[in-house]
Length: 395
Image (cartoon, rainbow, N blue to C red; front, side):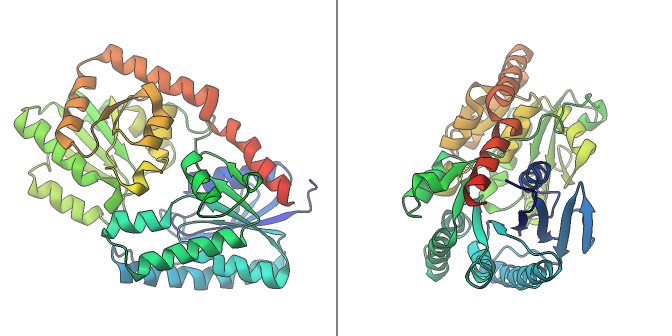
């Protein structure tokens, strides 16, 4: 590989560099000698139209307000594709690119990638973050024309891609079966953080709000994430078990954030549940490092069973014991660094939280196991060579 290969990475659901996976991919490629440009939406404090960070050229576009509905997503995705094509054309005119790397969702980015492959001869890498058809079912509980449209877009994306990067073995299996890709065309690159950057910080007792224990959640707040299950578990802990010595810190935002805040108020949890909004950098690391237990409340679904939740890997990187529902990829990631409740049983989930809080020895043991798994198997230094191998096959 020479330094002359130019890469354009397009992502829609989070801004760069806020999207940790995309940023690790971009910086790893840049260090390996590729010239890297990214296109992403604005948001979360990253609102410049263009800037260069760590040698990465970053172009950003606006998005309409988030709306958790089919029409809202259609509006967002059509707006994004229009901007992606405009900015990709600008990048092509200004510096060109040999590889276009598209990160779903949505799978509609194939419209941009396909055009440049057909008319400009670029190679296409599909970075498969989410199973879009399964995500649709998790959000809306139906298989209608939009679901079948997503299946069509997925097939077209696989057919267009010269190489597929899967986030886990479940996604790889989908690429090999309904995607029709050959084994040598699919590489698993997990989303584990870089331990040199995602590091443990000193605990800050102020986050406990005067209480003895702190339980943390971090992530997107949408329908599939199960935060409503978490809030009902908290109601059980506070009102049924009479535990008023625990503060619950929910970090993040998303299309369901306001609905979840209303549910928290309805359940009379305002004094015990804090919605912090998105956090980044050392502020995020300090908050998570201050937690006694971290939680991942995603309920069972075809989408969640097959999805590697980044938050689980990030909790493990910070040595935090985890409570989650017993889902296939969640268990595969965390192993003995987590305790597992019966899927969708929010009362058992609550009891698992209390079980960990009463045993500092168990928390310490599980936290150490998570950190070991990250250091020895999962962290980004183990994943970057796989990314570069995938690029070597198409460069």
